[in-house]
Image 1 (tube, one colour):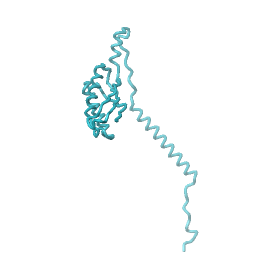
Image 2 (cartoon, rainbow, N blue to C red):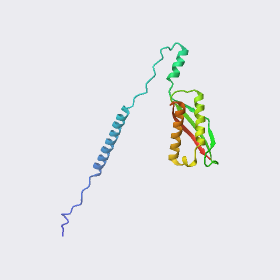
Image 3 (cartoon, rainbow, N blue to C red):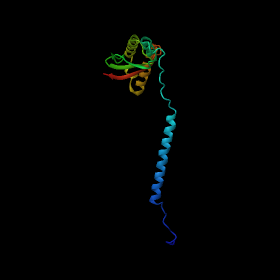
Image 4 (spheres, rainbow, N blue to C red):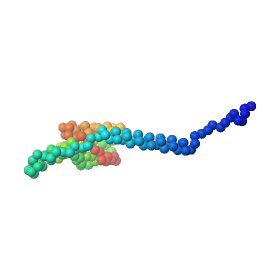
Length: 164
C-alpha cells in the first residue's frame, strides 16, 4: 500500500497568477490588433484633390472643365415591365440604375433601356431561378449595357425585381 504522505494532490496555479496571465494575453491581443490595424490602414492613399482649373476667371471655360472632371454618375432607368418568354403568363418588373464612368447623354440611357427591355423579354423562368440565376442575369445585363454604351457603363444596379 502506498503511503498517504507519498501521494500529494497536484498544485494548481493560484487565482492571482491566472488573472495576471489573462490580463497579459488580453493586452497582447489588443496590442496586436492595434498594430495590424495601423499597418493595414497605412496602405490606403488619401483621395487626390483635383487641381484648380487654369482659367478660373472665365465662367464658360470653368463649366466645361468641371464637366470633364466629373466622375462616376448613377442614372435611374425607367421601370421595365413585361412578360417572360416562357412561361408567358409570368410578368417581371425590373427597376434598375446604370453606373456611368462619366456623364453621358440621355439618348444613350434610353438606348440601354430599350436594349435591356428586349433582353428581359427573351428570358425564361428557369434562367433566373436561384442565386446563380440572379448572378447570371446581372452579368448579362452588365455586358449588354457596356456593349450598348461603348464601355461607358461600369455596372447595372438592380434596385427591385418582381415576378408575378
